[in-house]
Image (cartoon, rainbow, N blue to C red):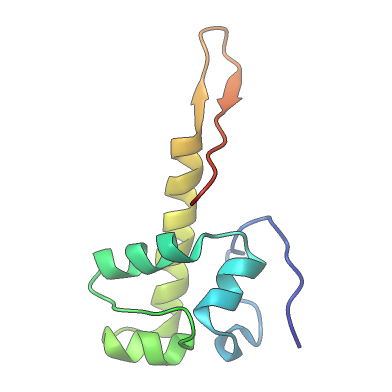
Length: 100
C-alpha cells in the first residue's frame, strides 16, 4: 500500500507503519527531497540510500529509527527557514526553488 502524499511535512511523531516504508517513499509522502534527506543523515554520520528501510539505516549509523525521524524533521524545518524571509513591511516572503 502506497501512502498518500500529504505535502505537510513529517508529523511530530512517526506514524504507524512508517518503518515498513523505504526512505524514498517517506520522502515522497512528506514532500522532503530525497537528496536533502540523505545529506541530512550523512551530516550526522548516518549513510543512507533511498531504497533502505529506517531500521537498516539506523543500524548502519548505530542509532534508533526514532532518531532518523527527528533528523529528517529538523532538516525539513531548516529547509523551510531557508525558503522564507521577512520583508521590510513585516510580511513573510516565500522564495520557491525547484530542486534539480
